[in-house]
Every structure is written in structure tokens, then in C-alpha cells.
Length: 200
Image (cartoon, rainbow, N blue to C red; front, side, top):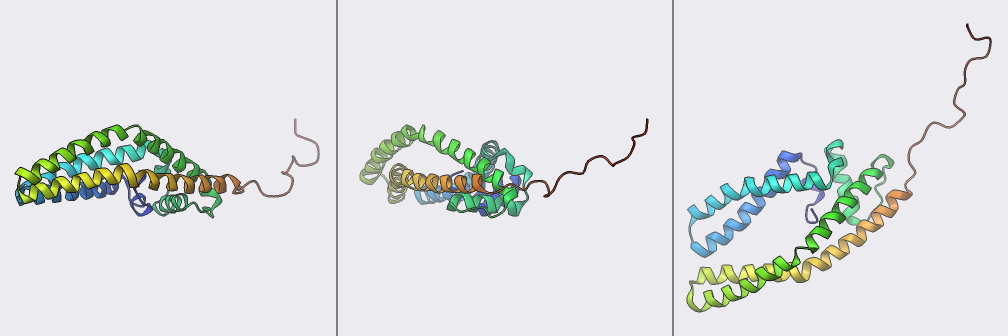
């Protein structure tokens, strides 16, 4: 969720699942193609991983921000962009949505922090595999292994800083949303009962 931009939220659940799943499928298929030089194996990865990852991502996004389904596509995108940039939403009716999205984003980022040991373990295994493939494997296997190690390092070093910066912006957007005046009833006293005797 921390890496999902506003343009993705503009789509509905099905298109979000297709977009996220296809991106992951193509990404990992490229690794398989580099390592094995097999277009068939890469195609299998795309076909299998696209629906699995897409459905999982769409469900996770829906649980993290359930209020998204109540907004129009353009409103969802506006809320996500304003929150991620740390800017006032500029529309009083969308201020509660900013708070809801920010809460979901904070919860997902906290859950991701608990999984850092998994990435670290994969990084250690990737290093061992990269060294082994460099000494005894093919060129494609070595390239794929080193690329995987680079991704693990980026996830451990770059992503935490990026996430911290994002959460600073989210906090600013939350403050602005809470300060946004909510639309209230029209000015003036509410009309009372008409004068004169009441019917009995």
C-alpha cells in the first residue's frame, strides 16, 4: 500500500488487482527469463503470478482502507495524492477520507516493519546464491542472483527511509484534514413551530 500511487486507486478493485498482479508477474518473469532464457517459463510465471498476487493485493488494499469503496474514483485518487504529498485536501467533504487512508497506510507500514527479518534472511541467502552462481552457474543465473541481492539491499536500506519520509507527509496531511472546517447546517436559527393555536 505504501508504494501504490493515486492513479492506481482511481481504478476499481478489479483493475487494481489486474494492475498490481500484472506488474508483479512481468517483474518476476523477467528474472526467470534472465536466469533460464526460457520464454515459456516466463509466460508461465506471468499467467500464474498475475491473478495470485493481484487478488492478494486488492484484498489487502480493501482491508486497509475500507472507506475507499464509498468514494468516486477521482475522489479516491485526490485523497491518496494529497495524503502522500502531505498537502491539504482542499475539499472539506474528503477530509474524513484522508484520515481513513492515513490510518490504513500507517497500519500497513507497521505490519511491514515486522517482516524485516524475512527480507534480511532472503538477503543472506541471495548473497550465498549469487556467489555460488558466479563461480559455478551460468551468466544468466549469476545476473539474476545479484539482481535479487540488490533488491533485498534496497528493501533494507532505501525503503525504510522512504517510508519514514512518507509517514512525515502523512502526518502533515492528517493535521491539515483535522483543521479543515466541516460543512455544517445553514446559518441562522432553525425554524420553530408556526405561531397560533395548535390543533387538538
